[in-house]
Each structure stands twice: as C-alpha cells, then as structure tokens.
Length: 394
Image 1 (cartoon, rainbow, N blue to C red):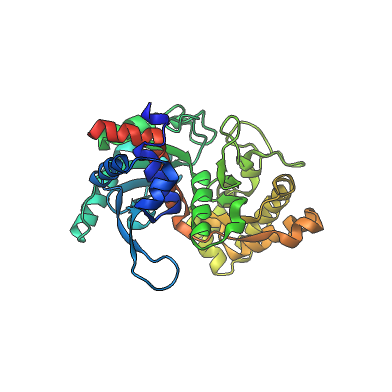
Image 2: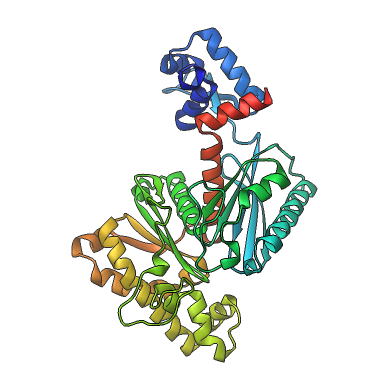
C-alpha cells in the first residue's frame, strides 16, 4: 500500500519540511522514486499548496539550483487559547507566523454551552478583521484549542476537571468542527506553552532546550515538559499537574477536593484571595499592585514563588532539564522569578544548579498560541493525515 511506501506524497512533504529546500535530484536519491513518480507526487502537493519552487545555492558561486520547499503560506490555522478569565485567538500560517491576534475577556467558568459559541463568534470576527486588513484568506488546515485543565488522550475531549467542573467530558473538538469544518486538536494550555517555547528556541538555534520544563502560573498552576524534543504527556495525560503536588504543613482546600495542594496556596487564585482586602479583584490588579511596589502584594508573591521554587526543585532533580521557563500573568513577574530562584537553586544539587537556566518565557503572551499552531501543523501534516487530506480533496 502507498501509505507505507517511499512513493507517498507524505514522504516527499516530510523530507521538505525537515531538510528542505531539496532539488529533485536530492529527492530522487533520498526516496528511491522513479522520476515520473516524483513528478506526480510533486504535482499533487503543489496543487494542494503545500510546496513551492525555491532557489538554493550549493557551495560557493555558480548558478542557483532550482529546488522544492515546504510552502507554509498556502493554508492557515486557527488557534484558541482559553484561560480562566480570557481567550486569545490567532490566525497563523504553517510556518507558525502569527498573522492576526485577538484577545478578549471571557469567563471560561461559565461552561462550554456559553463559552464555545462565544469563541466561534470571536474567531469569525478575527477572520473578518484579518480580511479587512488586507490578509488574503487561505483554506484552513486545522484548529487548535488550549484549555486550562486535563485533556483526554484523544486530544478532542476533556477529562474530569479539577477547577472547571462544568467542562467535565466536554467535546470541544466536535463543537468547533461543526462550526469551521476542519479537524480540531485540544491541548492542555501549559503543554501548548511548553511546545511554543520549544519551537521558538529551535528557531533561534537554541538546541540546548531539547529538555525543557515550562511552568505557567496564572489563575492556576500547570507545567509542560519537553523531553528529547517531544512533548511528554505521561501515561494518563496528566504529566505537568504540578499544581496538585501536596505540600507538607499546608491544609488549605483545593479545587480538586484534596487539601494542601500547591495551587491552593501559591496560584493566582490564592494571591487574589490574600489580596482581596486590598482591592484586588482580578489578576491584573495583583500585577498592578506589584508594579506599584505594594508591600503586601510583594510579600504575597514572594511567598508563592518560594513555595513553587521548592516544589520545582523535586521536579528538576528528577527530570534534569536544560531550562525552567516561567510564564503566565504571575509567573513572568520579575519579583516572582526572583522568589522561585532562591529555593530552586538551593535545593537542587550543585551539579544541576551550575547548568540549569531559570528564565521567563521567550514568547510571553504568545507562547501557547504558537505552541498550538505547531501542534496542529505536526498533527495535520503527519503521514496518515496527509493521505486523508489528499484523498478527501482529490
């Protein structure tokens, strides 16, 4: 069958994504195809706007050779990052360039029956705004959604939720597929953030980030782990649930039903509870108080950061990542990063501390949407998906 052979269009596309641009002679050598077969597969991919002609110069001087390259501009992606109190939407190309971004306040606790229709409206508004700004519409390759809670292994539905109970078992993929007519991938938001930082690091030549731990501290706390360049989700999909690590000496109830979880005492939700008497109603209020140097806010965030730093020391000792990056509204605050640094570096071994990098996320607010775009591209351009797409469109 062609699906398992080296004569597949998906094989040609995969080579061009990983090693392109490549001349036709190089493709023939790498695939072992007959020239006529290669011509056929190239035309199929060109018709679907997945490859283009390119010029490459081998060595020094001489006439540039005509080659083929992956074309990431012929199709677009929609990505949606749902937070507890906001949504970020983006239109991206297959090179993961963000072409248009829209951010709105949205109460995700209202549940899927309210939130998903609102997301569809916002996504259509994003597409209309992009078109009005002169961006030419392209066919959608797929749609990605980040969610602040456990996602089922099928990457389409949600597991039992610890914070947003109304979302238990919600079929996000099905609801949005009906709206936009494309496959939908659902991913935990911290995982998406980690993958976004990973691809950004690779784009900047930072191969040392092959092992990476990204911690999001916002309303809740979550983490994403990259191991050997791959997102590690765990046997049950629960890798990175650091917000539910139990702390000795803590007894505060958590949204998961247990007591003494890290998220119950060190998350943005915990900071809001502590600073409500000082007028904090949203995380943006906490950020503003810290920026203004409010002693109570600084004290609260330093305490939270120290608790998270101590918890992270255990994870770092077990995983030994190249870097730990902190993201989210709270996680990126300089005072918070400094508070994490002390106990983290004190509690890991000297050998680990010497080579470990602790920093803020590179992409800031765009980490998760970039990661979602990358995950959708990888899923939709995997061999089986390419075959299905080409078969369905002829």
